Length: 391
Image (cartoon, rainbow, N blue to C red; front, side, top):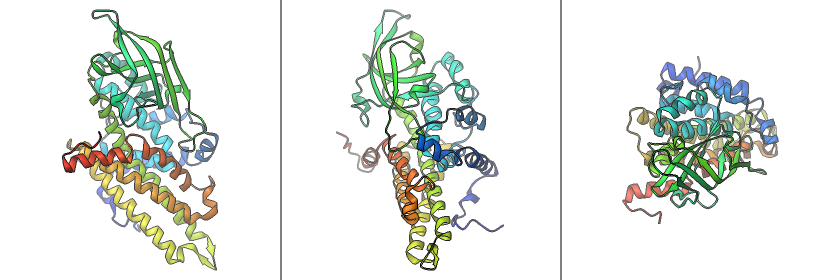
């Protein structure tokens, strides 16, 4: 069998047979269920809810978690799945990330045994959708300034909570069966589980988006929402709770962005080999070959970086600054690849017949959420200088 000319470094040889099998399984799902439909979903600005149980059956929801019906796969296996899903569309990978890396991880790591038993099996199956409410209208990169408040309601062990505030850009909130909500209390930041239908909760999808159109993001308002004592995530204390979940999502993004980049590159490569200009294919021109080579180099480097992070994570030694480096580099380079791929497609590249500009628009959101370039730059700056420049 001839080697893939786009895998110059033979990165496939670094994967185990089991990892290759999972990658191919998710790649096939993307080819069959996402790629034929994504232009319509994106154009209509809808998220296909029917995919939730299918993704549960595929085994990618809470993929890295153990027990409670979760697949219990490795970090590398989850990363490969994220890459293949985002080759279809960032919005689909984002659903898997919000469900598993954020909402399910919060319950799995910080929840009580009853909370885990109640929610995780159904979420792993895609029967219940979760969301993760952290970002606020005036608190994005600085969650320590969150204004959403939870105050004690009553006294003693049976005391409940009253929740007030607002969140913004909350993925899946309008369709979630359970919300993981982070709020300030007299004792610092705590997490709460808010089931769908709880009085006082209003989630409204944000419309007229130019990015992540095949996805759902919402404004959420909490107006005197009364919660019982069982709503509290008992093990979460301070910002370490949400940040632990964010690092899980950021890790997956380092992989996912390379999927969007690879799909953009492959689209441009195929087009350049078929499109004739001045009597020969675009691929025969030196300028086009330079663009394709530059794209390929960054995809190979970024994929190798993601794989290295995955091996570190599976060994239990992955550090936050390493995740920041992966997220910062791979999303930034994926966006450059997608834009360059569009240039090869010329005017045809601005239509949904081709993927690069859709990927580029999505990656503008991916570059912003789970930590902006600036935030990850300062994380790395603090690591190498020892000086906190955030404030």
